Image (cartoon, rainbow, N blue to C red):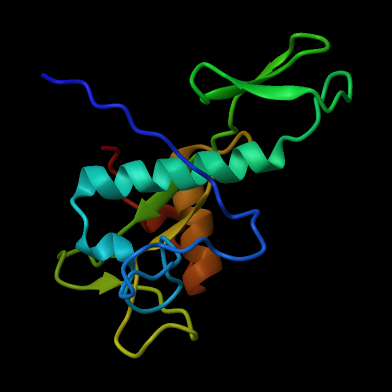
Length: 163
């Protein structure tokens, strides 16, 4: 298998977007809050790669100072997968927030509970999702998220399966 290298060039800090070349080329958010997204037309691997690049770009912009000593001399290391302080040597990696996504169905599996954001276009719905809190199991998170997002107590009626 041939190895392919990919690089991220973050231009989000620029006051004006750089010219793209062809007149029909436009800058667009990677994932739109509503409506179509550039990711809709990509293969899964390409969309995952772009999502990873966007997340890493945001993370690199957010780590300007060393949390250990306060130095501003913080540079990427491990091909950009982390950052390291030149003053004290401490290394940083992106924080990962564990999350769940759940499809709630009735006992017969014939109907499901979906959520809807009022800002979304008509006809757009979503499964329920959320972030785990510290010390919370996946099952506890599912119960809490269903109650928070749908106003439905799930409690003991929940039959959870892990993938």
